[in-house]
Every structure is written in structure tokens, then in C-alpha cells.
Image (cartoon, rainbow, N blue to C red; front, side, top):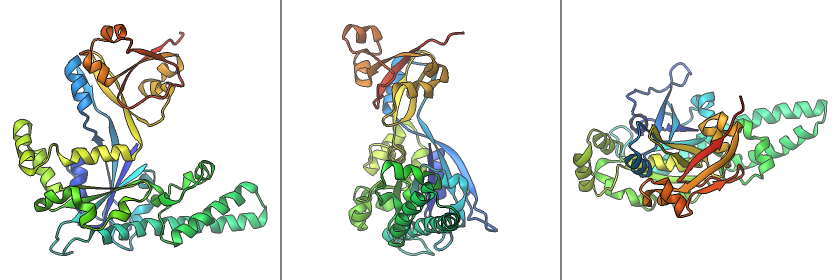
Length: 359
């Protein structure tokens, strides 16, 4: 799964990209009409993985992760970079919003910047819809095909929404209609997290940013969230470890680095949950879409497990921790279940897949 990182220039997006992915790259605005993209992998912190790793002391511990694609800063009225295939293929968007005073840009206005960015997404989608409608009209005049007529009707509905400055994520398409236009990868249809990048002196305002900047309507939109971080502070936090880091966070009134919350919000925005596999060799969190069946979860681990699927041994994280990692204890308590291929895996469950692949 992939998050597209986007923002207006001077929003602190480059710093946040580096924090999310552990990278150290400089992202320049696109040059000669070409957008500069950077990609990285973000690891999702999970205290459950930490606890399981402490129980099983494996050779390897692997956290859930997702890909981050960083698009160079998009200035108002400049949409060339939005047409980049890698960016349009993102599953959700993380919008970095300046909430600090800049010497050039002046005082922050997050609401204005969010509206400006959403407008660019809407206009980019409107360009795509207009071009496709023009081709459909010509094709239907030559030979009327029901599939094209249906597509034309759906796109006309989307065009009306876009012209009313409504992002497509707010349009409630039925499953069949949504499937018919999925291939367009509309930007304003993607789930979005507006992440306000606060001044280091305003960190205490974090929990109240929605009210402070009048973002209630934006936060209430379908498939949209508002979060916050101080990239400057998080850069300092990342350079500390152990008790020193905890003391620094305590001085700020934080229980954990804010970047952890941003990562978790992105994970949820992608519609992902985690199941775990445990053992002496590895403790691992596997990201899957909410609603994934046991057969599909097995395939996530290895295709042979899905091909030769027999049953899934399933137990809850809480039960395993209470049993101190002893599966024999879980069996004696009746807390180790056998589930079939249609079972829907739940967040935090530990799964062991029984399978047999004939040679």
C-alpha cells in the first residue's frame, strides 16, 4: 500500500518525509516541467510487536510498513506533478500543511492552504473527466455501446460534483459505479490526512488544532482526517533514545513521538489492520485490508500457504500475552481456535496457517 505525500511549498514536507522513512533527501520543486519524486518505506510503530518480541526473543522482528511517495511541492495553479503515474497510483494522501510563521509566506493559514490544495486536486480530476467525456461522446456517436453510455453517465455525475468544488471522496458512488471508474485513480477521491506542521513553540496547541484554525467542517468530511506534528521537534526527538527521549517528551507533555501517531493515522487511512506471526525465528506484523479472509491472509505470508490451505490456528493478542506466550496454555483454556478459509481475520490476532502442498 502506498501513501502520496503532498503539500504546498515551504510546508515542511521534506522534513516530514525524512522522518517517516528515515531518509535524508532534499526534495526540490519540479524543474523543466518534470516533478521530482522520492520514495521510501515507513515502518509503523506497534507496542504489540514490541511485547511479542519480548516474549519470544526472536532472531528478527519485523513491523508493518507502507510505501511513501513524496511529490515535490505544488504551488497554486501548478498541477504538472499531479499527473505523475507513481503519485496517482497512491492509495491515500498525506497533506502537509504549514502551521508556523514563515519569513516569506508570513503567518499560517491552514484552512486557506487546505482549500487551495484541494482545489488543485479537483481541477486535476476535472481535466481527466473532461478529456474522457470528449472521447466517449465521439465514440458513442459512431457506435452506441451500453458500457460507454453507463460510464458517460457516471462521469457526468462526477463532473457536476467537481464543478461544485466537491472532492470525489465526498461523492457516494455505489460499488458497481465505483468499480467502473476505479482505473482513473482520481486524486480528490483518495482518502486524505491533513497534517498540520506546527511551530515548535505551539506544540501544546496540537490537540486543539481543529478548533483553533476553524477546521471542523474539513475534519468532518467523508474519508478525511486532520492531524498534527511539529517536524522540528520530531527531528530533535529522533536524535534521542531511551530515557533521554522519554524525559524530553515528558517536558513537552507528550507520551510518545507525534510522528508515531501520524504513522498510525496513515495506516488507518489506508484501511489496514495487522495480524501477527510469532516464533523463535521471527515476530512479524502483516498489514492486510480490514475484512481480509483467512485464505487471503495466508497468501500474504506465502502463496503456498494459500494454495495448500487447511486451517488457520487463531488466538487473540491479549490471550497470548496473558499466557506469557505459551500456546499449550491457550489450548488448555480453549482460546486457540481453528478457522476456515472464509474466516475474516481481526486486528491484532496471531495466526498460524496449516497447509499442505503436494509435491
